[in-house]
Amino acid sequence: MELRNYVIKRLLICIPTFLISSVIIFSLMHIAPGDPIEIMFRGTRPTNPQIIELIREKLGLDKPIYEQYFIWISNFLRGDLGYSYVNNQPVIEQINARLWLTIELVLLSQVLSLLIGIVLGVIAAVKKNSWVDNFLSLSSLFGYSMPSFWMAILFILIFAVKLNWFPVCGSQTLGLEFDFWGALVDHLWHLTLPLLVLSLGSAAWYFRLVRSAMLDVLEMDYIKTARAKGLMERIVIYKHALRNAILPVVTSFGASLGFVLGGAVVVESIFAWPGLGEFAYKSTLARDYPSIIGINMMIVLCVLIANLITDVVIALIDPRIRY
Amino acid sequence: MQIVQDLETVEEKKVGMLHATWRRFKKNKASIAGAVITLIIVGMAVFAPLIAPYNPEKLNYGKELQPPSWNFLLGTDPGGRDILSFVIWGARTSLIVAVGAILIEVAIGVLIGGVAGYYGGVVDEVLMRFTDIIMTLPTILLLLTAVSMFKVRSIVLIMLIMGVLGWPWMARIVRSEFLSLKESLFVEAARSLGIRNLRIIFRHILPNAISPIIVVATLDAPFYIMYEATLSFLGLGDPTAISWGNLVAKGKNVLTSAWWVATFPGLMIFITTIGLNLLGDGLRDAFDVRARI
Image (cartoon, rainbow over all chains, first blue to last red; front, side, top):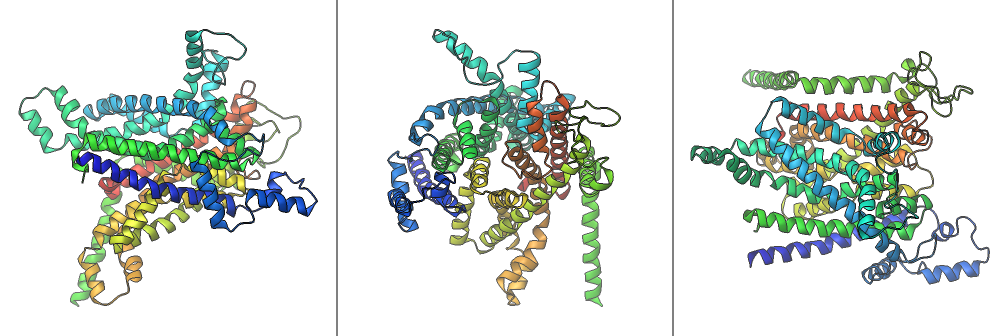
């Protein structure tokens, strides 16, 4: 019952967050210098002022700004994100076609990096200041200091070009017919390099969090008590210590998702992974505002949902949170 | 007389604290390594015109894509430009962008965090909720969006946008510092003397919250350097700037035939972020603000 109230409270907080984010994104679109009509026609605007007036009216640009916002946000909530300037297709359809590839990439990379980060973080904390710890900590420093685009290029050079183990780009081999399993293997084969690049940076970061949280927790009295009781060391570490040490990791999981999605933009554009990030990059280059705004809103929505889920997970792990 | 003596002991205490901080910092080899790397990069940025063997933007016809040699220690790019010189000058762009963004971050973060922490209550609630919202925004995507909206993409624009999006963590740290500091005796004393709130915030509390601010700023610097390089790499940075990211992008097209073009500027970004991360970690431990950051 208490948990339900907590979830409802978090859900309600999402609403103003979403609205304010949408206002920020909407105003970004409007503080940009330049006439939307000008941008729409790429400099070759129609000379007839009557036509321009007509387009302006059709787009609702003649209305006051707050009214434009309300029209825009209510359209958004009904799934109408406008039409791309590039090919006149509905933006929502293009997002739909690409969203799942990004979710697949990001979700898998987060699962992978959390696993690596937690396991190695615990090992490093338990063997504090040993060579294992030093080696892992140094690797972690390298991992989160390396720019992801550079890592991607090095991986392409080594694993795709020189060793020819993995394809350079795309999400599937084009022009070949596969059965279901063949297609899946082919897809995973394409997924490997972008997934690795996206995961290694996050894993290094989670490692750092887990290690320092574990070191703090292992100093606490209740751990000493557990050990004094004669509990097995494995149980002390994995059951008693990790449960508390994992909290900051879960908390930062929600907050860092925006960061990871940003990383996905870079990784997807380098590997030509046809997800939302690559779409964002292409739209940016083409100054395709309706698409850019739609992607931004979609990603904010994803981050909010992910944050909500993390909040619930935290409440499940740590009963103290439900106030 | 008594007052003068008290002041002297306060001075001594201050010096003692700095001394202790320095001792703690010195003890850690990793921190020293970070400081040395950072100093070298700063030196490169400041003395670029003196150190660089060539003009980084000069095209040398007939010398395109030369591998590293005694003439060109790190080789040349597709335009025959000397990569070593480019990389040295690139430090300047990276550091300017990072420092600019950090100044903006500190200004906004201190103002919002300080006001929230000092006044508390509804003000705190509203400001922190706003901070949370900014924190969930995907920075790179918004950077792309904002940059795409402007016809002229300059270094100043990029650092402005990064600073405007990058302050939430700073605000949180400053707030938590203010929350604890506002309960201390000297703040009560200042209040009882009738000193204005804003003066208390900036003249009395802020100087005492300076060490976490320095640590957060140092730890944020590598992010800004990475963002700027990423934007330049994607072809959305300042097209006229001598940026490491630009050169990596150029190198990407000749990756198989001339590995050195993309490798060396990338290595510079890598080394710079390592240096700043080590320095930031070292400062955090030395200032003993670990528990709060």
